[in-house]
Picture (tube, rainbow over the protein chains, first blue to last red):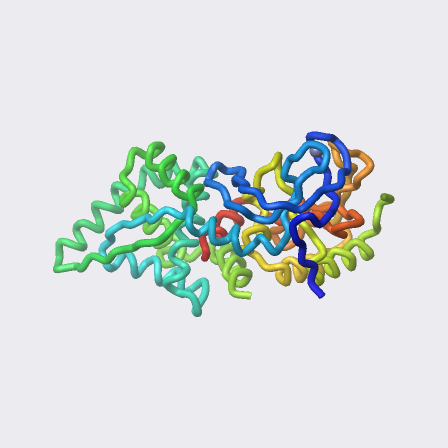
Amino acid sequence: MTKFYGPGDKSQAICDNCEDLVSTTFAYRSVPFDDSSGSVDNILVAVCDQCGTVLSVPPQSTPAIRRAREAATVSLEVNLRAPEIEILDTAAYEIDREATPRFRKPLITYYLNRLQAESDLLENTRRDFPIWAEQRKAIYARGDIPRRRLSFKVTPRTQALFSELTIKTGWQKTELVRSIVMLVGQDFIVQPNDKPLNYLRQVASLVNA
Amino acid sequence: MSKIGFTAAKQKLVAALDNGDYLHAARSGNLNSKNLLLPGQVSAEQIASIVKACQGPDYTSDPLHSCPSVEVYILKGDGWYIKFCFLENPSVMFISAQQLGYHDQILRTWR
Ligand SMILES: [Zn+2]
């Protein structure tokens, strides 16, 4: 049988405050996330019997935490020209034949994180994007190219990363997403690169398991 | 509690995941946003299979800073970083089950 706790049940935990292995009692509390993305109201947790600090959380509180996590998400919306969405979807299809539109978001998040972590990549992207954007403009001038909306929900942390990168680059949100489309195009279409492909395949296999 | 060898630790950890005999440690009274098992972004079954695939060299342990009588174990495998200790009740306290690098953030955006 799976363990299931009720209020008043006892367990153990390590209390950093008491610097000891302590006994705890289960009770309902509202507990914040450590990344200042809000808190979860009234979940069952184990509280230090000596100092009252919330020390642990049982698996049965996971669904409530998950709902709170989802509620804390922010909507992100950009309008892109259809061929740019096709670039994202081509890469997504290459990574995982099953999950094409679902993979747009992790794909963008991957490059956002790389732009944040790799200063060379950011520098090159800042240099190359304006040229690429001009080339696209010339292509789009040839005919009536529809726009499509790319919309997804992101965690407050990804939202923060977005804002940070728009400040660093001086670009609008749409330009930042388009610069990622350019990178995706380079890595998956122009000059296929195994590094992002293998990395993202690994992520996809894990989430689809 | 004395140090536990790799094979025994793996068995104990997998059994605890199977029986739900584990708790997630809070960080200074807060929910650890890096622990992907906490909001269910990875399942206990998935963590169990990652643990099963870990090899001896992926396993290290150290006494806990704030409470040196407790040994903290770390397993690193397949891009994961799983940190935990063994207690009496619960048998396992997860300090974190997170992905190395920015893996975790990509996973978090998934669902
Ligand atoms: Zn305490």
